[in-house]
Length: 421
Ligand SMILES: Cc1ncc(COP(=O)(O)O)c(C=O)c1O
Image 1 (cartoon, rainbow, N blue to C red):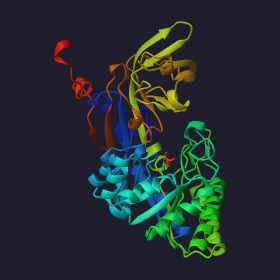
Image 2 (image 1 turned 135 degrees about the vertical axis):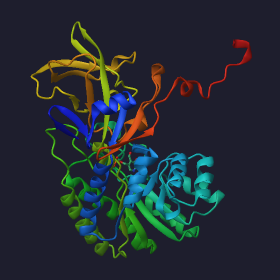
Image 3 (image 1 turned 90 degrees about the vertical axis):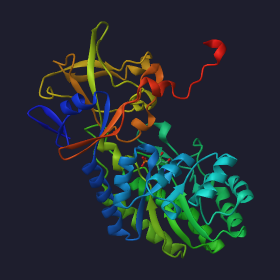
């Protein structure tokens, strides 16, 4: 994003052109920023541990245009559901390039997962006998809950520790791998995902040590040569302008150091080191472009926009912060105002008070920052509000990569029994 003579551009495309061409609200993704984010992170980790690979956690943004950018860069796919395995297949990825990290799997999930032939990453020891009932995965991993979790965007996104629903308890991890080995499974990985949006490099060192201390004992006692060890996602981005970015080089260095130290301590053959981030790749490359439609001066001055809680759920859902720009007014003096969407819920009053340009008026274009991860993917249709359009920009080119929904999408799967007509 850049601002020139007051006008906001996403790559080199003016947001006014986006609004005129595609309407609002519209999600816009900067292709070059996604590529830069991916390469910065990959280069950092490969510098300190060359046998390193990223999978992309497609849950954060499953638009196939976006996912194809990351596939072109060399990412595999972390799939949270059978449908995400099918999305990976639409990218031409399967087998060892996809990991199925679903949780609380149904028998149907298990059968379809086995049929797909991707790496199975089991969330609990109890799932293994259920998997073995239907077949033997070639490549298996367990997701450890190391008893610790963290998150910078609220407890809701903390994926490890006693209050998280994810992962195998450390007391059960040895038995889990033993059972798998005794069942004749030959290829193994290990996995963990205890937190999200972390900008402290020391965190990554700490969790790597935690995983290795659990997995190292397993490898040593059971004679398992892990083919990969996956540290999950969690690479953070700054949502607030005063927040410092993650020092990715430092994080990579600290991780590689402790990883190598623990490989030596437990006498493990060096496996591929992996991570499966999403936010770091796409979070700051995505924006929501919206329009100011109505302004109320009452108990408070409230700016009403078409960026509602159903368009961008994170503020209402997690209390998450997203910076807001107003096109053509960034140089103006600021005044405290509230800002909301058009949904009939007070949680849609998603900015209670913020210093925004004082001249903000009807028809102004707003740009909501850091919306590329867990943005469109978590949008929904409440209040009959349709899901927005998605657009990709690269230089001065722009493409519609998902159409705005229409009323037909709202009724697509609905049938009304004859006696009600
Ligand atoms: C298993 C797993 N891997 C990776 C990710 C991606 O996390 P992030 O966007 O924090 O990098 C998530 C997110 O919830 C996840 O659940």
